[in-house]
Length: 154
Image (cartoon, one colour):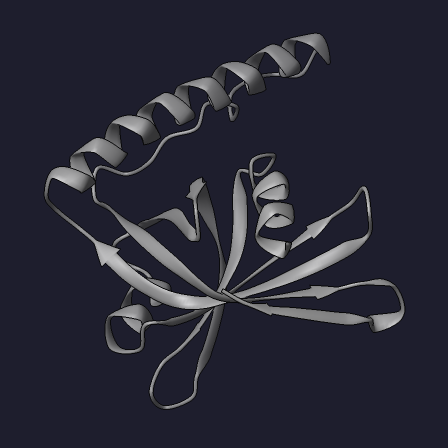
């Protein structure tokens, strides 16, 4: 099942590319911080000031893309986005975000020290004003070797 493959790939990622479109047909694609995947839902973090946020408020359709360098397969994930800006779920996810940011920062600093790099840009942080995008996966397309496609509706 492609959902299982996507879950394995995403757990090794910090960012995922998200494409949205407004009602005038103007596209927007930008990387978003990947927090977690649970069942058929992907949670992403973004600043509450950008085009992705604006587009999803008026058009909740999103398309995500990710590649697996080990297999050279790519995946397109289409789904419906819900924006979480306040409330108990927001607070709980904010705690998870803090933990993930801390782990990522520590890992980046340790790797930087191992490679004898300056670590001025290694810490990760999110603005105090952020939103959570809950992407409910509706379709996954695997793009294999020579353009071979395999689609699954979720």
